[in-house]
Length: 452
Image 1 (cartoon, helix red, strand yellow):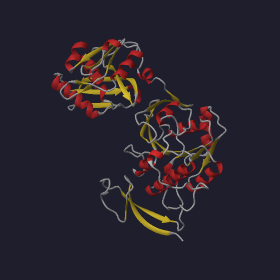
Image 2: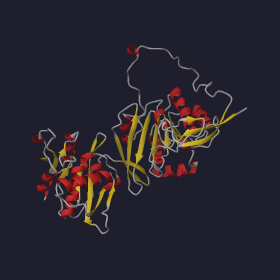
Image 3: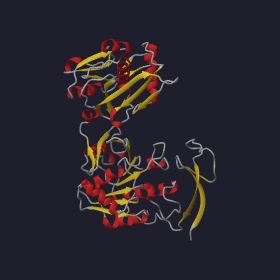
Image 4: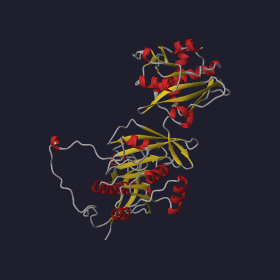
């Protein structure tokens, strides 16, 4: 006998309500409450355990608990292993989100074929033939990689108990459904219930589970926000489908740092790890052109060089255009206002276009100095020297502010053979110990006088 009821869920945070309301009282969002039909089974699904022996829950003093590190599973993918803190922790649940077509399934199938462990790859989106065709393009063979096309969590867990794999990959969590709740796959109640069952399986068997999650139009992982709190690691896979570069960031990591970054290059044969992204993000040119500047940024703990391209031209229409790619448009407007107010450049009547090459997005304020240098270069139509770098944050008063980890940024430029780097005067460092010449500037006017 099934028990049926209708309930209401907030699509943003997953809060349950007995009736429809306009605003969620927990997250404060409007018009996010949706109605779902829920059919619960009479039997209690939590009566059975995935293991024969249930662990005894006892109280321990914190001083009596061993603090030894977990033995991690090495995937063979250096970028992912470093991002996770040295590999996959047994019993952990990892959630990877990203836009459609960015390469989530490709990355996890590649890992499933590379790893020297028994892997169960569960797909609710592709057939066995489609997965095999993708595996053939990668030209990697792992006889211990098992494919299962199934969307019911109870059957998936039963097959996993029979196979006893070392790793389970789910593609994707939005396609799964639990027989204990009768609502469509992808609904909030189904996503939450399926994730809860997989977490229970992972913790009781010490088998790590990797989940692929779709994202919504706002760029966040689809489903209730509580989903990200339930799992141990949340990774975001980013990249423009028009470019070949992909970035893997850690938004949450219970077993390591969240300041890491993995960089990949997309090919027809799969994803290739990039050891030195600075060399490929700088475009090769036959001649030096105006409007190009090289900035030094930090993505997590990794310094890298990015090329900023700017184009300043006379406004054709009444209102000047401000177009950016890979850079915050509001921050560009702020920098243009600083140049106009503090340095006297009349850019309010000109179109300004800004592009960060490679299709990546940079939020580091340390590239402000490179951005204004590229804008000034295009405005004056004078090329910048091709052997100089810029790193510094621009304040509202036109001052060049100090940035963190300046030594790493300088060493990255020195390693790649650049001759001079412009930094803030307020970074207190010894400039004599570097083989690259370090120029210190304090205001926007200083950088203009030196360059032009």
